[in-house]
Image (cartoon, rainbow, N blue to C red; front, top):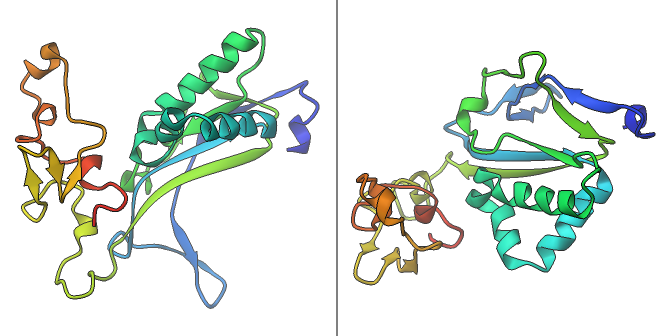
Length: 209
């Protein structure tokens, strides 16, 4: 942080490695097994404190932006891009105030080094803070009274109660609504209709189980 605090230099990230570990009783780190806790996806925002606070303040007053920045919706990074575009319009000469790493990456993070081949780098002006978003599924024990854990089933498996006429999954309205443009629906993509929807965040939203 101190090295880039003056703003005369920009941090250039050439790569990063990700793992999920726990510290044992002996003080040593060990990898967390996927059948213990499964990392569905993560997004890591790294940047200046002022810019990050601007994003939090904007999300506090904009429900649509807040939804784009959290949960499964953050995987698209559309919320961060929209916010950075807004900052760019306010000050066209400003350097990018944050960078996002991860996005839709999940369990494939392990033993999968992320590198940016020269001359490409992720540039961050005056990095000060980081804000991680983690979607971790507890896979080490079933739900009480059930032999299986519904949390393992983000895919819309037979255990999900799908009511096509009501537009609900396990009694909750699909949110955002399942809809495609006529052009995209014509491709036969199963995610365009609840009757053919096979899986995704709509079968794994908060409060669904």
